[in-house]
Length: 133
Image (cartoon, rainbow, N blue to C red):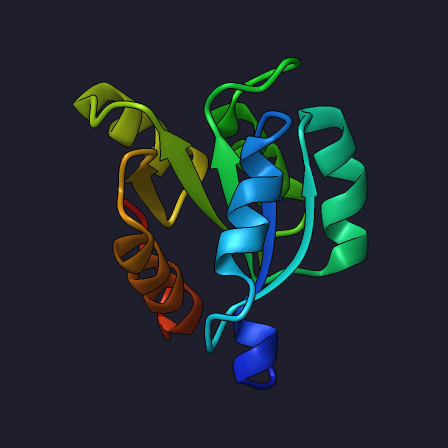
């Protein structure tokens, strides 16, 4: 459980080069969100996320060494307090089911505007009960 609003909004982004950095830059400065890191690969994410201790992780479906759903499942096993959000190009119902089975708290579309993304992140970070997609 997060100890404060700033803890609740600790956010780590796992997305291809350029995308992760852009998301961190765009989300920095939003009240309730505190981006603490970004990496473009699943392997590096598995090393860095436990050390960064985020509450939230945005996980891209397109990683050079895996995908967001596989990463979500592994994070759930290793650091179950991290609330994963799958960042996907499509709203495929099968993808949503796979994400839920892996333990994702939500899926968001890459074309989602910044306001909607921030709203989803705040909602997931402050949700009192575990609930999955």
